[in-house]
Image (cartoon, rainbow, N blue to C red; front, top):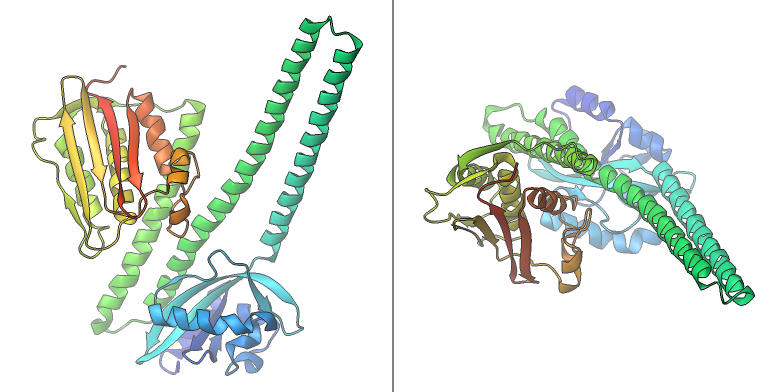
Length: 414
């Protein structure tokens, strides 16, 4: 299989710290690296030319075939096991949790699947520890609440005439409950944040690593289109990671009050042109953006970068959550006091039960959980707009589309 360029391929394989397993369309293992062999406890001679089920616990064999054929049919790089726990089987019979990234590739006209395997046993242990801590905290909250409740009832029975004193104690109890509740919420938020960062960074990094490995295999001039594809993948994922970091920095500045706005007078059309230019590179097949009419004379005295951030976030969301051959419509109007921006799409929409939480930090709607994202963009946009005297709202219907509207004063208060 890998006769040509064997030395280069072996160097790339052995340089990867993750386990790498390559199988053909019959699920026969055709190549592994040292990390994979050490992870599963087999030598190369014991694992190559064996069926992939050798590395999968027996109880998962029945469903694995359907998952594999489904992946081969769609032929796209993705993380395996969305929403499910995955396990590998070592030579000694023990099972261990894994994270698997699947990547299709063709070599000499033959189709293969490359799996990047990571042993996440330590991470699972940490998650279990966090769950145990949450359970202990909930028990502690319950015990403290019960103790305070008992104390209040005892005081009422001892002296009903001391209503004022009892009222003060009840208020103290409520404050304690609220403090404990906030403590619990903070702990849960930290857990969710760590899980989010781990997932949102690991998936793009795995894609970058895979594309970087495959770039070295396309050396012929007629393979330039394949090289360009992987270079584009690397560029997009690096850009995505950079945006995540910028979002986290924005949250920190907003929370600490360290944000500084730079006000200037600018044409709205300048911002729109920049946003539409960048958005055009993200459009899916057949998608179009309807450019707003009659905006050449519109101007604002605001923070230009924040206006661009808000418009860009909403336009990119409209593209991301809409299918091919759909329209993203941008409408902008201005009166003597305010400018109104409306971004309408024909996408998946927001489920009614999720709409009340859509601006909450880290919140993702139920129908968007499988789409890449952090759930902090709209929260940041809302905070900035309100700081600048503006507002944001939306109307949405699932499977029909969404319409987001944000309003800003034409002249910011400094």
